[in-house]
Image 1 (cartoon, rainbow, N blue to C red):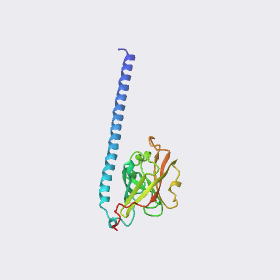
Image 2: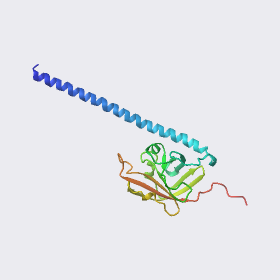
Image 3: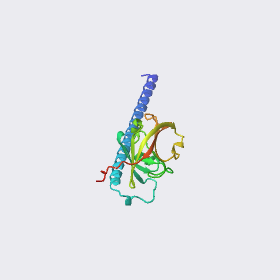
Image 4: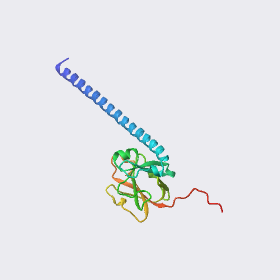
Length: 208
């Protein structure tokens, strides 16, 4: 083989080695990504299961007197959507990976003002894409259950923080990223507005 042929063969071997190395690298990267995704799902499920079991056994006397970042506030449920999740104080990445978060500086359930809760569009708040006017939402806390009825939905820019402002009366605002099928950081927010209504009693009427 002439020198020119040797050079071509060497170039091919080098190119084949680079392609093979790159293939192994991207395969390992993909496996790591899949492993992390699986860990996130399992960790969130385990956290929800543990905290829901703990919450169901909690009494008003057991509730913490001082609300801290990461502390469990209660549980949110939208029966028609089969949405049920633990609500935690705060809206950090770590909190929203395992639960839905009560946004600091907004009202707490049972208090006058606007209770604002955030959740990821690809996990706990994904069912919100099918929310309807009139849907019932329940917030359960150790102090009691609070019922809300959906009045409106809207899409706003991610920079619009006016949705956190207090409105007249007692309201609930649910916030998640939008569009729901967007890949990467979404440019907008999907906002659900609901108003508090009296909780219907399940107790039978007193005998006359």
